[in-house]
Structures are given as structure tokens and as C-alpha cells.
Length: 317
Image 1 (tube, helix red, strand yellow):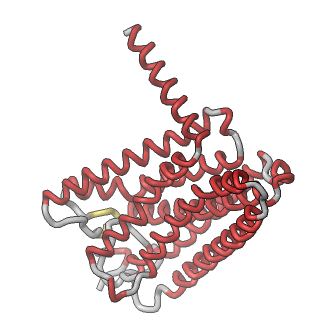
Image 2 (cartoon, helix red, strand yellow; image 1 turned 90 degrees about the vertical axis):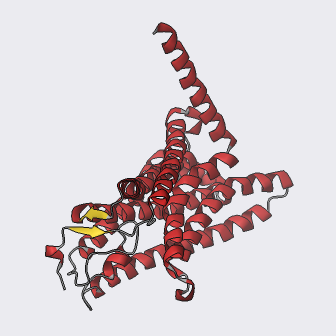
Image 3 (cartoon, helix red, strand yellow; image 1 turned 45 degrees about the horizontal axis):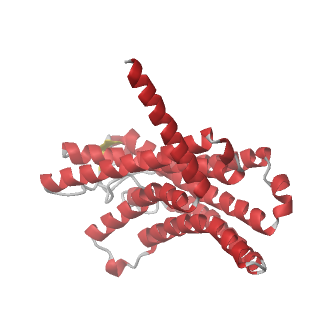
């Protein structure tokens, strides 16, 4: 028996038990994190520097890329450090910071995906009111509301989680700090208040999903009323990246938390946790870039411009 005041660190779940596999996981995480940093950084730079991309859709995409960058930088570096140095330790304060940042970025991603759905709804169903409903001030307010609500949610959940007494050791069954695994270490009946906060967060997420489903029902009805096939294809193509990113986010999260206990195993749980925490932030910019010609053109222009600057600078050295 121990309490939270006597715990100075937690023990994370090791990704592998042999040195060769640990180094392999380090290399894989390094490649994934570099790909995510490059892809999301390129989107942020292209949208920020490309004057043709200063529209509500790309404005929210920039914020989504920032959320993805934060999410991948919250879990992967510590996992890489533990694999490289063959350790499991994470300090109590670092664990609290990781929980806060993870909840913050995941909640902000859901909020931003909901706002982006509203952007697609207004663009297709109410095109004449697009400039009015999604002006620069309205977009700034919606982005600020998404980040603020995520911050408040993360603050409440983190503060409440780490105020609970711990009675079952300090070993977590996850390779990063996560609220459900920390709750397994708490004393009996002491986590009921935390479960109430989690239930409230789940209800908010459910409201977001209902809003997204309702919006897409209206979008599809509006698209099917477009007389020309080319117009329907263009309208659908603007929604496909958002639908793909949203589906990836929902499927991986739901499978991680709602999979049947009968198919649960340590190796499967570890693979699923990697799938929902690492894969979406890496693939999101790829999904958007593949379907958007304006974004690809802006990215190519940015890369070409930087390459030319490097060539000119190298001539003077």
C-alpha cells in the first residue's frame, strides 16, 4: 500500500524486452516523428506563407496541424528515450504534464474537426452566407473557443486525476501516461469524481459526433441536388479529406477504448495504443495534401523557394 505523496515516479510499459527490439522501436518512432514533424510543419508553413491559402478551410487546417504536432511530441519523445536508454521511469510531474498535454491536444483535435465540419456545411449548404458566417473574426473566435475548451477540459481532468490517492503501486500498463491506466492505481471508490468528469467529457464528444453526422447528412442531401456530375464530384472532393481524417480519429480511438475484453492482450493493447496515438497525427497532413491541389502547389512553391535560397547562399560561402 502506498499513497500519491510517496510516489516520485511512475513505471511505463516497455515497448520491448530485448535490446534489439528496443533499438528497432527507437528507430521506428524516430522515423515516424520526423515524418510527422516534416509533414505538419510543411502544412503550417505553406498556409502561413501562401496568400492563396488564406481561407477558413486552410486556417482551421493550420490549427489542426499544430494540434497534431503537439500530440506527437507529447508521447513519442519519452517513448524514444526509454527505448534508447532501456528504462521505464517517468517522474510524477512529467507524467502529469504528459496527461495534461495529451488530453489538451486530443480534445482540441476533436473540437477543430467539428469546426471544420461546420466550415464544409456552410460552404456547400449555405454558400451565399459563407463570407458572413465564416469571416476572419468568426474563424478566430471559433479557433480560440476550440483551444480554450480543450485547455479547460485538460486542466480539470489532470488536476482531478492527480489529486486522487494511489494505493496500487506506480506501474502503468501503457507506454505513456494515460488517465484510464492511472485510475487503475487509485484507491477503491476514490475515482468516482474522476469518472464523472470523464463521463461529462464523453458526453461533449458525443455531442460533437452528433453534430458532425447531422451536418454531413445535410451536406450529402445538398450535394445530391446539384444537377451537374462535375459539380457533385467537386463538392464531394472537398469533404473527402475531412471525412478520412475524422474516420481515422474515430476508428482508432473507439477501437482502443471499446474493444471487447475477450480479444485484449498486452501485445494487442500496445499495438492499438501506438495506432491511435501516433498514426493519426502522422497521416492527417498526408491525407489533406493528397486531395488538395492548392495545398500541394503551395508546398512545392515553398520547397522550391527554400531550395533556391539555399543555392544562392551556398554560392556566397
